[in-house]
Every structure is written in C-alpha cells, then in structure tokens.
Length: 436
Image 1 (cartoon, rainbow, N blue to C red):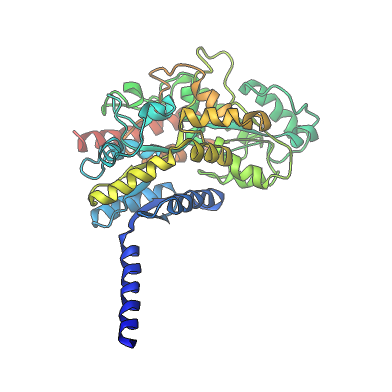
Image 2: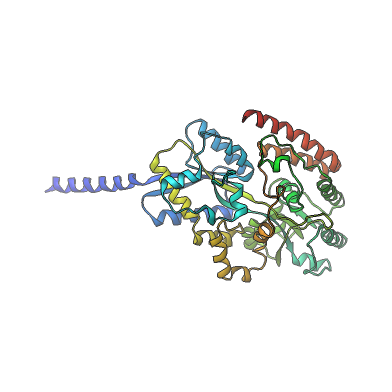
C-alpha cells in the first residue's frame, strides 16, 4: 500500500512537471523602467494568465541604445531572445540585418494568429513596413512630441494660461514674460534631436535627408542644415544664452524638472503623460508642438518616436507560434486602448482609437488626442512620412554634440549643423557600403 502511494505521488509530481515543461517560454527584452515598466509587466501578466501554452518573460536591458546593443550581442552569441524592443532610429539597422530577424508578417502568417495589417494607424504602420506594405516589426509604443504647459507657472508670471502658444513666435513672447518675472526655467526639452530637428523638419515640411529621408535608398545625405532648421536652432541658442531655454540632457532628464514644477514649458513625447499625470502637483495642459509662422507648408505632420517589437531568427516553430499569439494579444483593442490611455502613447490600431473616443476618454482628458491629430491631420509628404537612416543612433549622438555646442555658445547654429551633416554623412556612406 505504501509503495502504491509513493508511486501515485511520483506520477502526480511527474504530471505536474510535464505540465510546467509544456509551457513554451518567450523572452521579451525591453527598455522600460518606472511607470512604463509596471504597465508593460501588467500586459505580460494578463497574457500569461489568459492561456497556459506559453509564458512570456520580460527582461529589462537598459535604455533604448543599450537594449539594441544587447540584442545584437546576444544574436552573435546564439543567445538571442524571441522578441526585442528596438527604438525607431534602429529601424534601418534592423531592416538591413538579413538572417537576424524573422519578419512579423511571416510570424503571424505561420502562427495563424489574428492579424490585420490594415487595422493599424497609417503613419505608425508605414514606419515599419517594406515599400510593398509588408510589416517587418510590430508597432508597440509609438509617440510624437507635444508641448507640455505648466499653467500655474504662466499665471504666476502674469500670463493668461489659455494664451496662444501655437507658434514659436508666441512661445517667444511667453518666454520673455517668464524670464522677466524671475522664472528660472521658462523652457526645457527632452530628446532634443528628435523634437527640435527630426520632428521640427517634418512639422515644417523640410527635408531632414535626401532620398525621401532615406526611404527611397541607402545613398541618402543629411540636409538638416537648411535655412529653416538653422533659424530655429539659432533662436533656441539665443534663448539658452538669455536663460530662457534651460538644457538638462540628451534624453529625458528635463522631465524630472518639469514634473517637479520647476519649468513652465516642456517639449516632450506625448508619452510623458504617464509620469506627468502621476507626479505633477500643478495644473498642466497638453498643447500641439509649436511651428514657425511664415514657413510655407507648416504645420504639416509630426512623426513617431518610441519603438517596435522585432522577432529574432533562430528559434523553434512552437516558440514563434507563441510569439504570434502574444503579438496578436498586444494588438487587441482592449489592450491598446488601455495602454494609450495609461501612457499617452498612440493607440496603434484604428479600433483602439475609436474605443478610446467612444469611452469618453478624450472628453474627460483634454489634449490627449493631440498626438493623433498631429500625425494624421495632413497627408504625409516625402519630407514628412518618417526617417529611415542607417547608423541613426550614432548620428543622433553627433547631432547632440553639435547642439550642445550651440546651447553653450561655442558655435552658431549654421556651423554646428554643417558639422553635423558632414560627420553624419560619413556614417551614412559607411552604412551604405556595408549593405550594398
């Protein structure tokens, strides 16, 4: 009897173990911490609880650049995850990595999971698809820059918090008044290249690079040193000299200053919503990104930042089936609508946008629809549909260096942007030669 009991217990344990082993593990390497990391983890938990065939494991690998580099190193070592979060400037690099990626359209077709490419927002989908419309990676967190306003700070400077801030001319007037009132941080920014050169160019329908900003070929050259861009960067430099623009860092270091109530105006991603809503103890507002009145074609449309999810090659078919199920889950209207409402990132599907509108979210939270309107209000032109450049992360580093020289008063805008073009073009030529 005792032997039978032991055998039964062993059989039960073995069955439980086999059940656990039957779950296929899917590794997702990402770049999120803080509130965004919590919301990402919540999505993983919801998916894992919804079925028993697969278990997704999230792994934070540092900031965007560090996560991309970790994925590349892991692939070379044969230890790559199934899913890798890659920020938008890494798109051309991933597209050129033949043999290292498994295109999302193939993953979804082979996995048989629900997938409708036409259901995604056009400006978002277009960034991650081939010229014939095949989706290479899945849009995940897509954002666009907006102007964040500390209404209390404007009031404290004797300004009407409802004042017109639609143009940089009007912003300049506000900065003058804020500085005169003794405000120590009238304006700050996050992601200076992304907002004040990349999106600035598309918003003003100016080419950032030749060959339709890299979409039409690898033989592209930077053109970000045109007169419209030079005028804007020089004005920013003058504001920095006068203490009206305070530079806090290349990424989102300025976010902490704005959330603490130290800065009156802040150019930042629409995805700043999650942190600002959670931390700000002042009356804040979302406004459209300003444009320079008098520039023909402005405002045009802004473009996305954020990241997409790339599926890496070298895994078993059952793992890709799990990836397909998970990516399909992330694209569902309920998941996307909640993500959009919680974070300020764009809803990547038309259904999620409609659901959010129907639920009354935009009426209850004015300004949260501005990001969508900025991106979809005008038909994109060859200058404004996006940027697809090789070695773009390194090029951004060069631009950051040159902009910092302007903010410090060491260079004028024309010299700095001319240098950024010359140095950046050298990287583009090397990328072109390596991928011919």
